[in-house]
Image 1 (cartoon, rainbow, N blue to C red):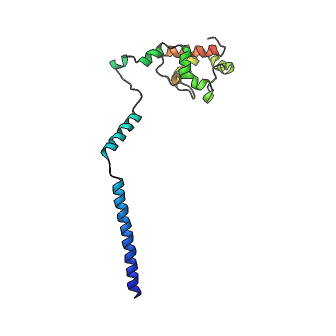
Image 2 (cartoon, one colour):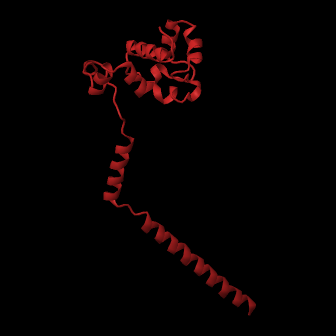
Image 3 (cartoon, one colour):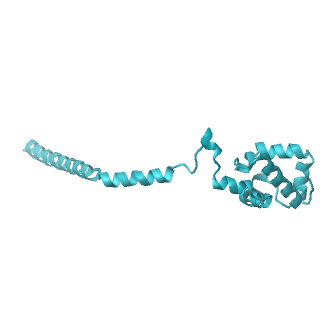
Amino acid sequence: MEDQEFINNFSAVLAAVVAIVVFIFVLAIGLSSKDETMDMAMEKRTKERIAPISRVHVGEVAAAATPAADAMAEATPEQIYQSACNACHAAGVLEAPRLEDRAAWETRYAQGLDVLYQSVINGKGNMPAKGGRIDLSDDAIRKTVDYMLEAAGLVP
């Protein structure tokens, strides 16, 4: 009698487990069904979010200047400082000499103006080339360095 009772109980538990597995399987299929319009909308939003903010063109197309490049070509050294250098040099981020910190600039100026220019143009230590603004000309960088030296009380 005990064997028959065990078989009945075991069969009931097995049937319950199978029913739960089937229910979970059906639920998973229902939840994973794809709505094409939702997928297309999500894909479009994703592509917009990860789209590049600029493009590099080589050849004749590159000769056409963009309005932003034209604006920076006409920018004053102070405007360039505000847009490119201020983020680090105003607060002394990553050992960047503060704009009016004469002592910090004297050590750099003592190495020679050409060395200082090349350090800024090519990057040095924590500072990227041209302060991260590779769209600026070397001449604009030199003028901006001169502006920063003058603000520190040094005349190049």
